[in-house]
Length: 150
Image (cartoon, rainbow, N blue to C red; front, side):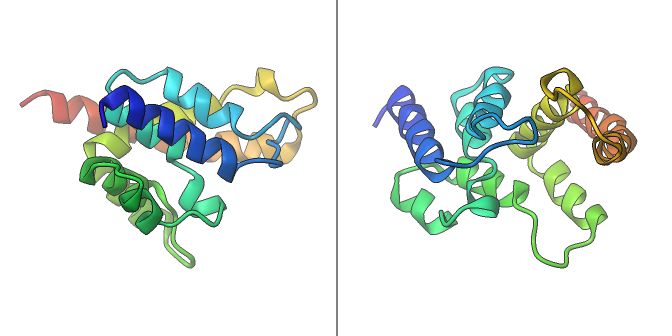
């Protein structure tokens, strides 16, 4: 299967997995992974981006992604981006930083989540979330810069 066919498969899996889900603005949830995907360039990054929430938020497992034919780097990135129950935030971000594809996807994910213009009436909860993202975002960008120095 060529990269475009795999990307189409990733979009299909994510669309089916997120069917009926809505985001904080009440819009179809699949719009979020699609926007994240649009910020990235390589096929592997795009696949990981559109799939980045399926294991965490739906019944899709990493095994399903392997069986669907996704490469080890794509599956590893989705795994790195999947939060574990009871996991410390710092451990999560260290795992993301250690995976170059996951790091780029997470930066694009945060970029999308920082866009309050998509939410008609932001709440204090939204402001608190933005504050948490703003605290970690520079560290992620610095990690990306550091990986490109060598």
